[in-house]
Length: 277
Ligand SMILES: [Fe+2]
Image (cartoon, rainbow, N blue to C red; front, side):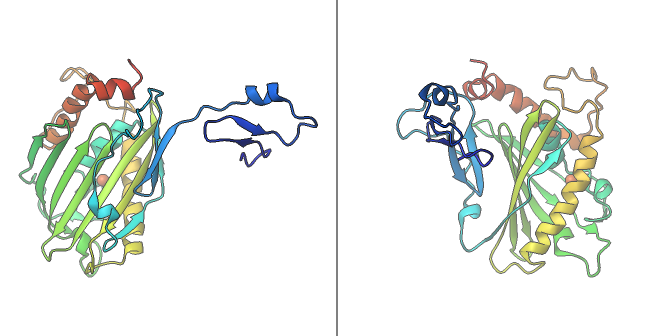
């Protein structure tokens, strides 16, 4: 039911009732037919199939599997959807980047104890996704006592194209966190970041709500960085140097994202998703 004027619709989008009509008027009701979309609910989010290619009975688009998000022994908290005045690829790049923490997040995560880039094991996977495994160096936290979240840990990132990216943090005591970011485009130069966080059982550190509040502050620092970059969206196919892009060693993962995204866009999955069929 529409909360504004009480019009009612069935699941196919057919209008069933317009309360303000004195007499039922099937013609007007027929004109009020809505477009409907296939959806599935998972990980606390509603996933919408925006293109209208039909699915056969029982078929569905599979989402990346993140078992920790559905494991009742873990704490699962949803972040507030966060609008960015920047293209969605800016957000993916920011999320993948290992070298901005000590600068963009100096007030929250802390300054780097060592600015050098850790060795990153980056590889493309057969399904088009890609991953990175790297040690995350300790940060010199401004907080007292030093926070668990800023301590040295192992960082495992995985990106399923186009925009579903998880980060698994494994701490030295065995505790873990898994975060996901899904920046959903609103316009070519703006997006909303949907995100959540799963925390392993008996996590020795800040409670879930404190971790969420902290992540909100960190994300806001990222938002400012993303919104102040020009162009507002990462070009899909920049000739090296053509955009004045200075590629640094820390951009290895961002380069992998661009390469795999270009591949994905010309694949069958990409062409369906972007309506270019
Ligand atoms: Fe960041």
